[in-house]
Image (cartoon, rainbow, N blue to C red):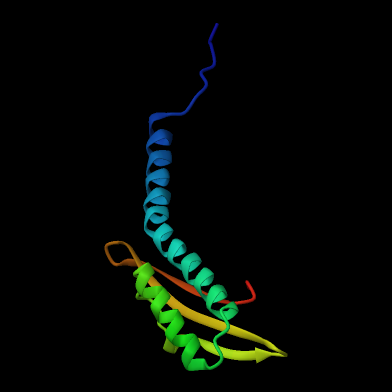
Length: 117
């Protein structure tokens, strides 16, 4: 009687390993940009709630906060400051190019505002 074998073949295991390595490589390169985006979002919310009265005040507070965080992807000049009723809304948008390997890069477009969107 023949017994049926179960499991993954060597070729299947190699292909699975390559896929896992590719996903891990992209994840390791993207994670710092996501952490940076979260820090920028938090800073924008804090600056908008901080009571700056002019656009220049808000931009300066933002630049000071980013200097502490050591973030250079965006600056206070890149912020769009508007009013929604009596509330100050600060919006931002920037692009980040993440090299993956060789000539392959990943373009990530980040945007958000002080309302948490």
